Length: 241
Image (cartoon, rainbow, N blue to C red):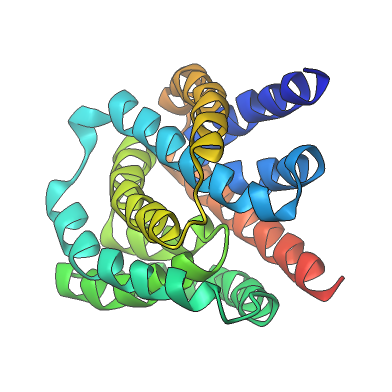
């Protein structure tokens, strides 16, 4: 019972953070889930909780979702996430995590370079990029930060970014969960635990809305840069230790 209280408290804080920036819940929750339930059980629990967390951000920002972006993203990301989830069963994720960490950090100067030249991505760019992101999401626990530079380069900020990214991620995580279930890696107990923990993420998302409405778009982009750096360094430390 104590473990659940601690995990749910962290889940609420993670829900607030991810409700403001669009990612971070998995990074915050995974260590607590591993301690409470074990490393093998933590992955499918987080997969279910991530679906609920993303659905909550979809409901909060429903009116600002760019459905063209969602369609362009999901059409390639979903099938490639299934391929990545199957690859997870045979490929140690540490090498992938270390590579992603370097990628996250490198995206900070790249985003500024693209912004300085007023370069904006088109829908077909997002479809091509989403195939890569979907595959990587199937392998590792969290790739939330990887969407940031591309969705920002398309022109999405604040609620439009949060809602569109969340709706796009829902399809990817559902696909991943179905693959886990088909291989017996998602028992009913993990589904129940994920739904409970996802409830704390949902509560945090509603709390976060008030903060995000007051946030200046320029400050929002700077916040994204800081969290990309933090996520990259955290993932690199995890992969190397």
